[in-house]
Image (cartoon, rainbow, N blue to C red; front, side):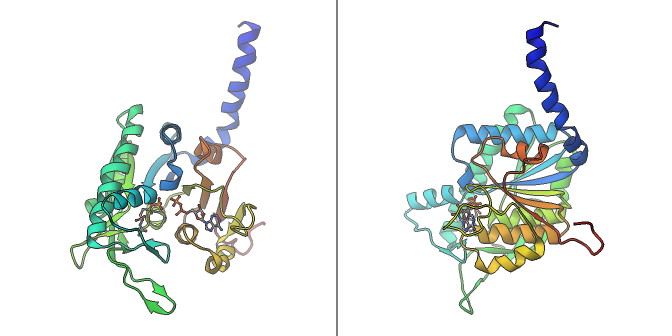
Length: 302
Ligand SMILES: Nc1ncnc2c1ncn2[C@@H]1O[C@H](COP(=O)(O)OP(=O)(O)O)[C@@H](O)[C@H]1O
Ligand SMILES: CC(=O)N[C@@H](CCC(=O)OP(=O)(O)O)C(=O)O
């Protein structure tokens, strides 16, 4: 081998070998990746996201994608002359708005991600929570200032059926799930926050990791005054912090808590604006966002 080739080949081999412990650790494990609408900034980032997910698949992990689309829904509602309003971090969803939500999530955002993933092979299959009873919900009425408030067709998850997703994973596919649920009691479909849906799926699937890609570096300790990111916190530490959180971070961190309390080993909030942030997070020591871990059991070494 020429000296020049050795010089370029060796560093590449070293990078591959560095990933070996992580490849071994994650082999065969399910990882639920939530791709937030705010992180879908440009075509390059979306293509890099698809590459990362396909990489995980070929590296022996079982990725499941749950996508958001908040900004995309707001833009479409705007075109329909419907004003977007959020209460308790959730979109007030009228019957007409629900049609738009479903059209954008299942017909636009999900299709685009499925298409990007399938440029690498016949891998991705899109579904919504309605399919095969994957997500069942009942009408959600959040409590605001001590009163239950009606925010329309917003769902609270009551049941997850992992059958369809597990069948797809067993068939070597990458499920791409839109956060729309069916209701058992009134026949309506419901709008579910995508972080909440991803966390519930991660827990029900017994996933090793929940990874939430968003448009900030992680959970800021004192948002919006400082950009100091909390790199690691236990479930109990997070629980204490929850009442202080605001807006989009509420469902994200509640979801992370639900996931780790439900058996997921780590839940991470990472910056989706950084290209290949998924690979950095899974295959290197340089975790870049906020990691939530279960409380240490008595007798565990710190
Ligand atoms: N403590 C916090 N740390 C980081 N971001 C926060 C915090 N509190 C609120 N936020 C807001 O939450 C947003 C992320 O949530 P959201 O807009 O719902 O994103 P996504 O579309 O990725 O789900 C951030 O852009 C930021 O404005
Ligand atoms: C009930 C509720 O608020 N649903 C969300 C669903 C999409 C979502 O969660 O998208 P992001 O992850 O991009 O925020 C919405 O209508 O915006």
